[in-house]
Image: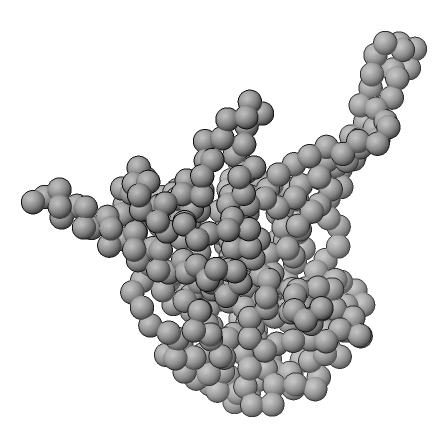
Length: 356
């Protein structure tokens, strides 16, 4: 394995800009008062303080992307016949995703199980995944709303990353995580970390020990599922929800999408866009029937998917990485940690009552 590398603070931006000459570099930058992942250029204001307002998932699953282009034409020599020409629009550019926090990078592993699940391979996601080096940045100042440690992660975890940057005095220690990350770093003009590697490990250890406490939120599949028909519970926890969908759009692990064909004359495109399960329209059928026509049903689905249905399908892995964005940006301050804890308490209380 390649030895760890080091880069000084004042060398970081020039190095990233040099990478941007041959590949797209996505990094957290200030835009309109927010910190968002965007293509980096010389005018970008790189922001590595805390968690970006939005997750990095758009790097691999764009908010809106064209899946294919098509064109209708009259059949040659047979006017009554319509011919259809379809053109692929696969991503073709290499990318370097810098500054994703470990929770963001772990979110990609949630995507991997769905979009790269053997025979169910999404070629658009997988092509971007293959072409993107994910360079995570270890956290040094977790917020009170961070709870990666309660869902199986940590502020210095490497799941989903190819490379891990750890802030140390005067710069960053850079460690390869995957063979791809190692090969990438071997081509870079970076100095060896030498004695700084132990400092990086101590930084990660100290931050992990400073994380907010609380009971683990995993292992609640059974409890959440037992409340499936408890409309009183779900109605109560969803009462103040505005169904704005901010939680889903900002979540590193929400991967639902919608597809539409947009046609102009004989030409058209098939577009995939993010969707969110807290929207009334998410399950609205053409007949007008909606199996989740209330906030209670939609909240049940959101919590159930992350803490029961997904783990049941994927070896106990949660579809939550504990970034806390859904708490920070919820306009009515709903707290997913409290909802799961309430669900667990409610299910246990009902079980005890049934055993009396």
